[in-house]
Amino acid sequence: MGQKGKEIVGVNLDELIDRLNKALADEWLAYYQYWIGARVVKGAMRQAVVAELEEHANDELKHAGMIVDRILQLDGKPILKPEDWYKLTNCGYDAPEDSSVKTALEQNIKGEQCAIDVYSKLVDFTKEKDVITYNMVVGILQDEIEHEDDLQTLLEDIEKK
Ligand code: FE
Ligand code: FE
Ligand code: MG
Image 1 (cartoon, rainbow, N blue to C red):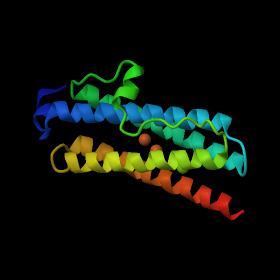
Image 2: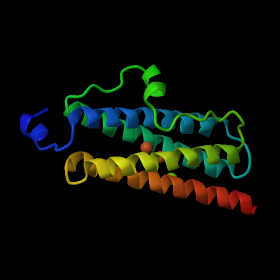
Image 3: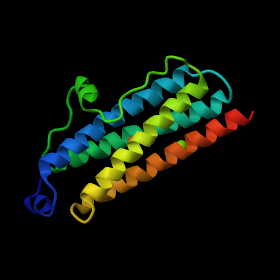
Image 4: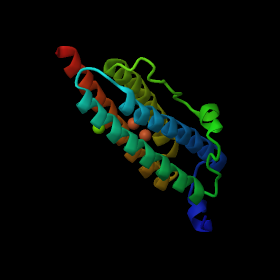
């Protein structure tokens, strides 16, 4: 990274990169959970649910890309092996074994709630110390809050039927 660009980062760089890699692991697992979920779910309002899951999968993949770009900018090393996703994840992975729409929504809501927690902590960690990472994590947090809301709204609609 440019020397000056790194100098203005007021948090411990190793800790920041570790936290970003943990969030990167979460994003890949969330991506796959949505992506495979969109293909296997069955039940009420399937089409609406599939569309939402696919949209969220794309968002999680975009988040992963943003995080890797920032890690590289900080001269950090992003996760290179999928096996490290499981070692580093905060939020884990819930396989959509029971392919019901309702279970998949509940599993993904749980994942979003964990993501909201992770990114709020990253917002606190970088606030007034690393404006570039701060802006990025605020943007991701906004998306995760929207994801949780979209899924909860769908679940309520299904439960009202
Ligand atoms: Fe995400
Ligand atoms: Fe999300
Ligand atoms: Mg959505």
